[in-house]
Length: 173
Image (cartoon, rainbow, N blue to C red; front, top):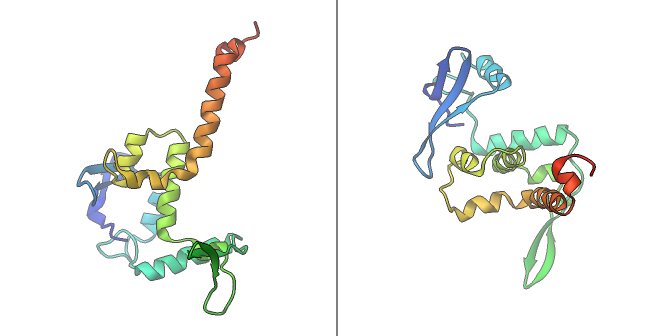
């Protein structure tokens, strides 16, 4: 929500975001996909000096929850906290079980982006730089726990190639 039009860089047919990360102060330039450029063009005049119209953090999170609900991800998903070592379900103000969409926030989207980039094979150092995490950041690994199953499948595939020469060379021996 803090992106300003001065953060946009236009070069030939490409639009990029030029930012200084808050955590590390590093300069990062991120090329934008065409669909993001279309969104920016849509709100160009109404956003003033910002890239998008202004929303409070609370309102942004409400909009994200509504988007997720409309996508159909509204199945029950209890919110569990532990009290004195015992799991206890936290209910809504109306006494209802929370739904999946109630758990989602803008920060969830940040975590999902980091995980998705890693799963798509983007180098970890690049993802760190984009997300503003310093090298060796313990917080970064809190974002990527979900990716462990994916990493395990890749390691198992590599191990299979080691024990099967045919798999290694892609041919039958």
